[in-house]
Image 1 (cartoon, helix red, strand yellow):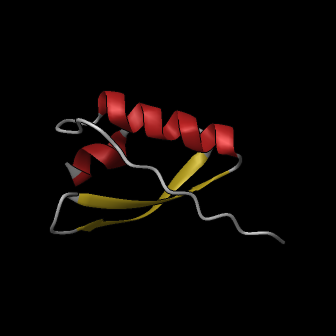
Image 2 (cartoon, one colour):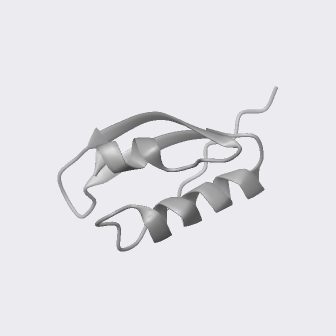
Image 3 (cartoon, rainbow, N blue to C red):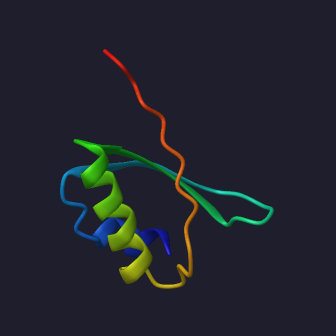
Length: 65
């Protein structure tokens, strides 16, 4: 699954890291995006195009400068 994520076109966002975990979720992705809209589009791209992804839970960390 991770290799497939690296090949997806993440327009306006960068995949910073991906961690496999145990529990109700299988994978945690750390993304940096130019805007909330770019983040939403990236999550949609991953959900619709990454093999094996059935649903996502999205949590935002907002950095104010």
